[in-house]
Image (cartoon, chains in turn purple, blue):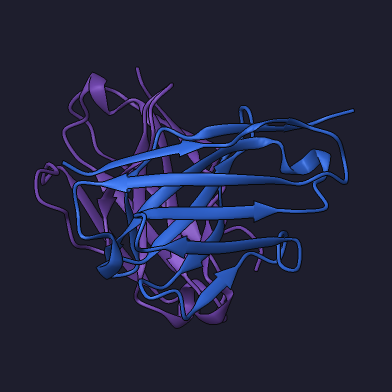
Length: 110
Length: 118
């Protein structure tokens, strides 16, 4: 399976909302409602912020929300804060092929 | 709390072999499936391998299938990744990751650097 497609970078001002897309095909992301999203700050390990397309783990701010339609998943961050500046990765289970990540999106808070 | 500590990385020549270990603590290891995920320097995340909690099911990324083998010793609370026929493109930090359930990955170990170079 090829990597899922994400924009290389997005940016927004504090208080604004941004959306990061994650595109796949009918044989990977489109076949399963099992997309997760990860936040990775520089020099740190990733942390899951969304699972099963739209669920938030305990302790994750409700400013983070996820959705999926067809072959595309989305992560929306509302009320942007400076601390949201990080790399974001989508990931999907793809059956016997295991899991596949997106290429990652660098979020810059202006 | 959950701790995942990787070891065994280092510098190896192309075509060589290396075995990574991941010592797990803070949870009941033999009830949780595990993953290996790698990140090349300055690059994105790449899922590598998965092993079911009882070791009876494994999945691999196309890029490593046939060269890497994931295994576990539940009596030692340890996860392994045997890496053979290593290539320059296998150079990366390798993370041991606990399966979160619901097909997500969390938490992540700090990682261990593997460098394939002559």
